[in-house]
Length: 291
Image (cartoon, rainbow, N blue to C red; front, side):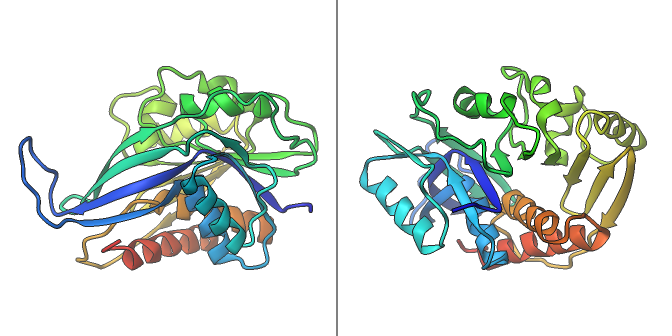
């Protein structure tokens, strides 16, 4: 069945600890809030389905032949997401995550078990593919051939998550990307700086130069987002008044999912699109504040 979009990337089995502060060595933390759920590309798949019940969504990933992989397949099918392009391996990826509510930070310990796929599913007829995450070496080891073998009728979007990608040659893949989505946390990495953490005039100029390579760029922070197209841009300032401690895990994926749905459904990105994405991501965080 033809899909509106394929989400391509690793799925992880998350073991999440929600703590009031980051633990110190030899700390004894009793009865923490813990949840186990699927993350990585699964976050965007689930968010897309939540925001659009009619969207035809396809998943391209690798899952283990273990019971965790079987449960992931069941949940994807329950969400009416196509699973024909999921490859089965020996063991499902997992990660251990600490959410520090004191400063809304996360610390992640991922374990990626998969090796290069011998026979990659054919995605030549898939019009839109979204890659997660373009800067991760674990992702590029598996999926880089799909990117460089892009056909003329395909649209590629991607987000990035690593704060540093010295081991990856991301510039090699940027010319194939039509839409790039990332947060201000990744500014130093993608712009080659050391003190870029906000939308300063210098950062905006550098993003406009990057826009010459990637035709559409969406950058977001907690309080602002910018959309660049043809070296022009629009800005949305987001104001939220809440003293709530948030679980920020998956916030960026939910922001990206909302943007993707706007592009597919409305064929454009507007200030209203950025506003919707901020509100959608915030609503997700508030709903999951206690996991």
